[in-house]
Image (tube, rainbow, N blue to C red; front, side):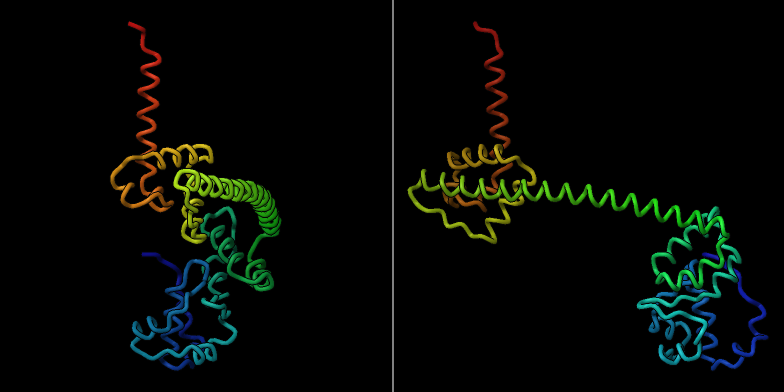
Length: 254
C-alpha cells in the first residue's frame, strides 16, 4: 500500500472547513487516490460509491476552483507536488518519474507554470538536454522506421502483383479456365503469405500445390484459400523430398 504525507493543518484552513461535507471528504479522497504525480483519473461513480454521497463533477469543479487543473480525463492537483516533494530532484527516481509523467500529460504552458518552479536550475537544463536527446533519437528512429516501411511496402506491392499474375496464368495454363480472383479475400491471403515466404519460394509452393494429388485438395479445389491451408504440409513434403534427394546424391555408388 503506497504511503504519502498528509496535511494535519488542513482542519485549520477556512477554505477546507467551509466546504460542503461531501466535497470536504471528496478532497481528501482525491488527494489519497491520485497517483504520485498528483493526477487523479476521473471516476465520479467510484468516488460516490466510496463516500456514499453523490459527487457531481461540475459542483466539485466550483468548490475546488484554483486548486485543480481539469484535464480531459484527469484532474491535476498542483499543490500536491509542493507538499509531497518540496523540490523535484531528478536524481531521485520518484521525482524523475513525476516530471516525465507531467511532461507527457500537461500542456507546455501548464508544465512551465506548475512543474518548472520546483526544479533546480541545473536540473532544468538537464531536463532540457534529456528532452532534446530523446527527440533526436526519436526522429532518427522514426526516419529509419519510415524507410524500412517504404522498402517493405514496395517489396510487398511488387511481390503481390507478380505472384497474383503468376497464380492466374498458371491456373489458366493448367485448367484452361480463368481464375476468378477475389480482390479482398485472395488479396489478403497473398499479402499474408508474402510475409512469411519469399516470392520465389511461394511460386515453388504454388507449383507443388497445383500438382498435388491429395484427396482433400482434389475435392476442395485449387483456390488460394485452400492453398493457404495446405502450404505447411506442402512445404514439409518438399523439404522431405529435397532431403531424400540430397541423401541419394551424396551416397556412395554401389
